[in-house]
Length: 230
Image 1 (cartoon, rainbow, N blue to C red):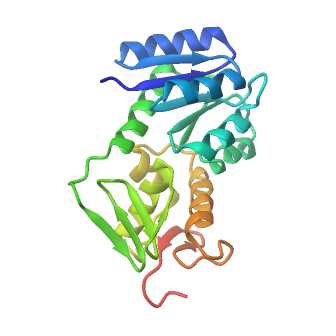
Image 2: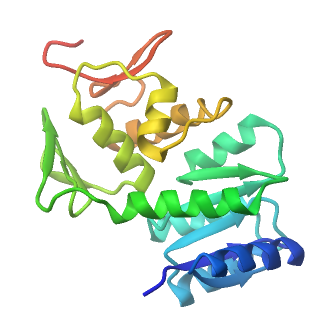
Image 3: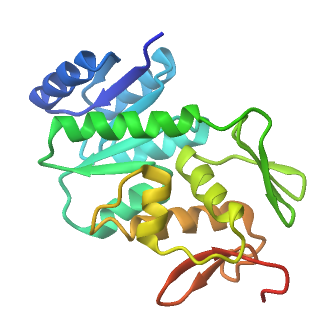
């Protein structure tokens, strides 16, 4: 069965173009044109992925993302015309998996949709489990636990944590982490990793301001702690 994509944008032309490209790529498409319609469609249509504009009438896109994240880990790709990096990082900190800046190529959006869904679907052997310390990741079920307690992660957060846990002590640059979790690394997108790391620390660290698991290596990037790391 083809995956269902919810497009949320108040510009009918953008919805029409994206619908055409996504349907041509084999996806089912549902559309909403404001924040209220977006939340209704999310709850009624059970999309596999949401392409969400940040600038929406009725309810702002950031508030839509916040409401969705309270109920679901469905992947979200943001569309934004905002040039301020802080606005994009806010969206990522709310749990969005990726973003595309307007104006954009519809083919790029289709490629991003495929990449995110590929990550969600997973391609690891069944029952493969990664662990480091008391953090464990079931790659087949895409479930994470810390100290035996389940932790709800977005697809991007799960993949980022898996990359780090698989190689404790290895320092990854931001570009390397982007390439690992998304399959591409565009200059200018590096700081999105910081937002995802911040989210992960909020979920798995006892004190996110003094992390025990995901450590910053200043000037280089991030690593997962080895035994003996302070």
